Image (cartoon, rainbow, N blue to C red):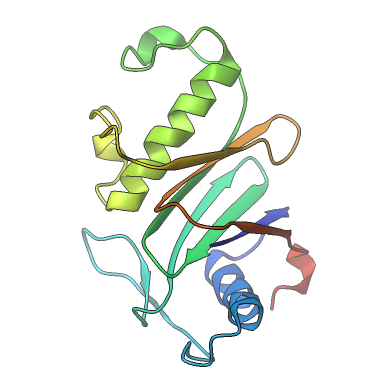
Length: 161
């Protein structure tokens, strides 16, 4: 699995395609297609036009996170900010930091399964695998995927064409 992070505004589709090219180079798998398209179908999460790579994307307050893997993946990044805990009784948190650790876990899980944000209140199975990252000061990121090695890269959004 490779995670790509960037600070700043970037076109999501262009960012996915730009990072996919780096993913393909890093992985070195010649079976991966050189170019990909993003497929969007109503009621389903976006996917690539190959079954050899899966992706998931998240944005929060000027930061973007993209995960690409050989297997299904869900990612979420959030700026840690003030929260009205009473609006989220399904999260038992003592601080904003704790809240966003739990929130990113839940959101990455529903993105992993493809259920979407409407399922954010559902219980998460105990066998779900998560990796947490304090990527940038004031942000928290989480990945839901099968356990695997993780590489992370910071990308320059101005290089995305």
